[in-house]
View 1: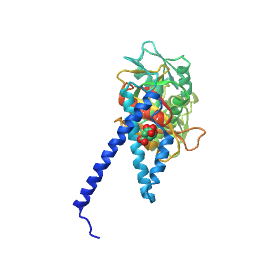
View 2 (view 1 turned 90 degrees about the horizontal axis):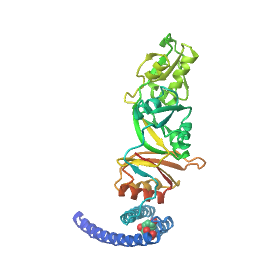
View 3 (view 1 turned 180 degrees about the vertical axis):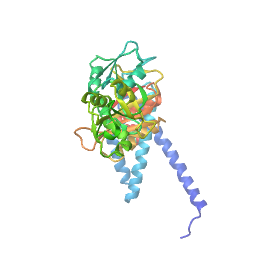
View 4 (view 1 turned 180 degrees about the horizontal axis):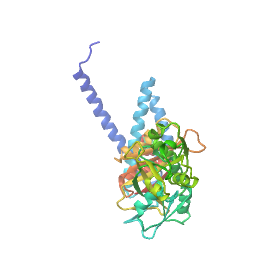
Length: 378
Ligand SMILES: O=C(O)C(=O)C[C@]1(C(=O)O)C=C[C@@H](O)C=C1
């Protein structure tokens, strides 16, 4: 058989692609009519059963594993594009993603009651002071769970919770609390975290035997601490609790990893300052409230959703962002309690709930994923 030259093959490919584009256009035109029907009847865009039938049908039309997989991917993508086209039409016809959030010019901060976890001098206290200023009425509770409860039950207007650290990563317990309670993220604030090794006024570094701190802080200072193998590292609720413990137990062989401010507050001496290895060590705190409000100029949305344990489910759901031009900042997953190997995803995207592109993306995710929740726009 005579081999075709490259020019000739490309000419044939061009012809096939022209036909494919024309057919694709016709397919999309039909999908537009489907959307009109669905808008008229209130049917959801996503029909998982129909999509599965389609995949089974088209993969049955080709031979061999490679082509079956290729055709499956091709049609999965085409149907995703089709869905996003339909969501876009829905938005244009005035259909809105259902949410209860109300836009506000500014958050109501005057006279706010603000709760944080820990004791005075904890980093959460620092973050609360940074966001609300020294005039706000701040108080503290023992656990993060308690702080969320204070807001949900109306005793506090806002709670300040750490959610992510630039070196140790997500504060996973607080992601779980976002699910347990129905509070919303109204704002965020960043605090540069600098840990010091603190001891009693008569302590000497060479006599230290035990070091107390929050596990995240111990992790953030692991290079410094692990260079002193003889020190026993003990986790406590937070860094300020560690400082308080060292003061109260009065044992000069004990030290705490906490902020220098906590050291001053509890009358401890700085044995070593800035012992965290990442000198830009920053923690992101979220400000939670019971009211589903968002500032008109909010630029970031946090949401959560669940996905079945199925090949490609995350890839497919994320296409809702891609086809709507929505930028994703962060993704985090947490196991769903009681459902082994199934995950809940937490995603931060750029945008505002009033944007059509965001509404389209959220509409797709709420239909295709399970239990989507908008956690806040801030
Ligand atoms: O048949 C439909 O209901 C469509 O909306 C069309 C289509 C497709 O592109 O084939 C798109 C989305 C649905 O989830 C199923 C199929």
